[in-house]
Image 1: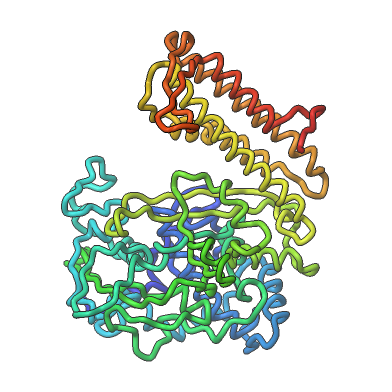
Image 2: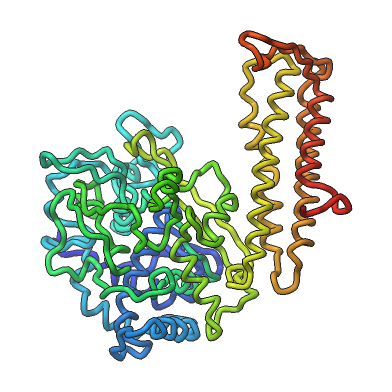
Length: 548
């Protein structure tokens, strides 16, 4: 077994999906130079693809912040330089071979997966860390010591070890999404939390092929407005970071952030199989106002305190896997305010959209994808992974389309209100049926969101800001939403049964005097009529006010 083995620039390990939808493994160099020929990354999980995308972006940021498309030295001096560089790359339709090849050849020795001193994405010092088997490395398994996955996608040797290609992909993923179960080896060391990617409400722009996806996320200006510091990916360090649980300053350049070593890792192998790894905590920094991170949704964790002090603090906002992504539209794509800070990648795409020289077609559809891990108590273990996406016309992000975004936000707000009405309706039906310990409200709201999910996505995707009128599109959706909610309500009445139709009297506190109560008769017809009344107020007929 050789000490120096498996160079990631030459070996096939990056999973991509071809134009014919077949999946193949290619080298890191090939993934970049032929990105225009692939539909997308095709790793085992969307979270793994997110980690892989950030590695590819780190290479592109480093190369094209230093040289132009011909490989001639041309560092950015003004913000316009970055925009011009991006436009030149995009118009090529592929990444130029010479500058990428020259750069990666220069750093070829830093991409060995196995190396006695500089193994890629690893440090030899991690050998003293917590030891894990291959099932912990493999995100499709991730079995804890007390939780066995009954229907695993791997069996036999596939559970006990990984190929070098698999291990390399999961190495990136574990670094970004590791849980907090590993114990520190040193004394008095701070808590570092989950891996950096696991802390994010991860979001990326999605193109029609891998080249477009990389370009849309290649934020050559921070938040679309200012120049970055000099790029410094982890493989360019004279000495790799090796100290356990090290607090560092917030990176001022994308390559350093995209290659952040949240964990100290070292793969273990037997023969041609990776059998596991050892792990220590790695680099971390405060997440508050860490706006160098371009691929996350943000939130103000204490809006009331911020309102009193006048100082707003934002932190990355993890996605709720039970909440459809379109319900986050207001906090992701709308105007910034006291409690809103848009993701950097969204602001970057807006900057491109507002540039009259940008080669992006304004009528093209753009997709924003999210992914993440759902962790258990205190991020101590991973429960599940999830992903979602949203597609709409690019021109919705232009400066002149604020009214459109405001209209969409209002309709999402109406959907939230309609869900509350559905939940209350379910509660009243339960009382009518004689069930005083109702637990159906949340399930009913979930069912409502499931019912309107695809219709809302299709409606949003159908909006053409250049041809449509906001009021007419709002009327279109309101009519559709009312119809869907009404039909769901009718189904709920039918399922409530005869007992709910006859009804039950329920004793309720009046609230006017202590211990004073009154009796209210709940019936399915009464509850249904009240539901329809509230629904019609929310979604009035056009002749009654429409979008008011």
